[in-house]
Structures are given as C-alpha cells and as structure tokens.
Image (cartoon, rainbow, N blue to C red):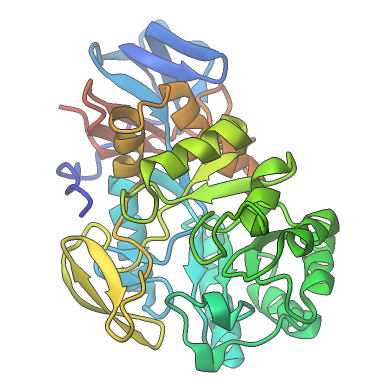
Length: 394
C-alpha cells in the first residue's frame, strides 16, 4: 500500500509579484545534481534570476526534483477516472498531486464504444481546463488472451474507424492508445494514430517477436506496463518483451510497486533500454492513496487487500494502488538506481513522450514551477504545482 501523503497546505502560494528562492538543497537538473543549489520561482514559473528583494526558503538536507509525470493512471483517493463525476476526477487528481504527480494523464478501461466516446468528451474538458495532460485509452482493442482486468465480453479488434471515433470524441486531447497490434486492423490503427500525433502503445498483447517488430516499424513507440499482460521472455520465442526492449524507438512503462515486477525484471529493463527509455507509471486505480476494500474498475469488481488490487473473479492483478512518490522511493532505496536516472524515468521521459517537455519534466527557467521536495530518505516533504504549494515544506 502506498504511504499516506503529508498534510496538504491550505492554499499556500508564492506571491505572483515576487521571487522566491529555494536554497540549500540538492537540485536535480538535466545536467546533473547540484549540491547546495537553488531554484528561483516567479509568477508560477521557474526563473533564471531573482529580484534583490526575493524571499528565501532554506531546504538544506533535502532534494529538489521536477514534479512527477504519470502517463498511465485510472484514479486515486477513492475516485475513478473511468466512471466518476467531475468532482471524483478532481479528487483523484488532487490525491496524486499530493504525492508529487503534478502532470497526469487519465486512463480509461475497456467499455462499450459509445460509453468510451462519451467519457472521452467528458475528460477532454478537464484537459482543456489544464487539470489533466491528456487521455489514454487502455482497451477495448486488446487481446482476450492477455486481457488482465478488462471485460472480455467488451473487447474488440482495433478497427481503424473505431479508433478514429475515440480520437474524434477526445477533441485533440487523446495522448495514447494501447493496442494488441497483432489483431486484425492493429497495424493500420498504429499508422492512424501516428498520423494524428497520438502515441501507439503495444500492450495487453499476445504478439510474437516478429509481429511486435512490425508494429514498431509502423510507428508504435511505447510498451504498456512492460512484462505485464504479454507473453514472457523465451529463449526460442522471445515475444514482444525482447522486441520492445531492444528498439531505441520504444519507451517502456514500468510499474515499480514491488508487485507487478520483480526487482531483477526492473534491473533488466533499465540495463537493456537505458534510463532514457524508461517511464515509471502507476497504473493506479481508485484505491491509490485511499485504502483497502471493494472497488469497481469499469464493469469489474476489484478487491484490494494489503495494497494489492485483484479482480474478485479470477484474481488477476487489477491496476495498482501505487503513487509516484512510492515508485521514486523504491527505485532509490530498493533498486538503488541513481537519482538522476529516476528523475528521467518519472519526469523527463514521460513529459517528452506527451509533448509537454517545454513546460514540465525538468527544473529549467521558463518552465512551470512544478517540483517535489524530498528528505534524505526520499519521503515527500513538499509539492509545488505552478508556483502554489500543494504540500508546504515544514
């Protein structure tokens, strides 16, 4: 179970007319870590220089890293992105923001096409308002052999016309579609997505190595939660995992919660793909940051026990209860990854994939003042979103 968030500040913010300098921390920049560095905040953005009368906040003994970017997330705080109201979605966004995720994509699950199209229009309004960074359609165009926590009765082949229906319903806010590209229409749908500037992700797939290579050559650039919901790596039939890891055009999603992946699998992915081709995601469902109990994921009932979500019928893992701060801390303390590599995987790489790296994903002048303050145990002590403290450092 993800650790609970620190107490949220009450509408604390950095005054828009002033500069505030965060000093003394280890600041992780694209060029490396600066000990005793500083970050200047002005008007909701990161600035290059401070005014003479700028306020100062000493964060010695802490880390300052970019705000986390999660490109695969179904909900949190007891609220669902897949079926909840506006208030529910905002509650889920706030929950993840309190855990350091300042940029978030809402993921759907398999449902009736008309419902998914309606949901896309609903979520697109929150994208247009700046609350979400986009929409990810996970299903219904996935393999019944690797359906995971998706209703088999609602699965369908990736007909390009139906893929286009969802893109149109999203009104330009669709950022990614997960496909089993070996199914009829899969390759054509990948090409359609590429033409519309939408990420084609290979996932929930039963594809062979050769079929996966074909999908990558057609334009697929992301592996949806690598290792999960796909054939295992074999020495005679390497399957999709080998194809996705070896190709420099592909970024691989990893769910670093200790349930979805053995540490050796995560190490293999980092070793083979490299830190520039990994994106940490949560694949979170409603229980993230909330607690154990009975939940609904699309049309399927889910039981969460000891922080692990499984379908009531069949027992398949059903998303996660992960928040990105826990993924970061685990990567640093269990997997022993360099902090700079973790920042690439949890901030910079997904921001680039989503096309928002000009605004978020690194601590550079001109970008949004989105950052996370961590103590020396990598626990969250502060979260800043567009210059406003969500969690105020104490």
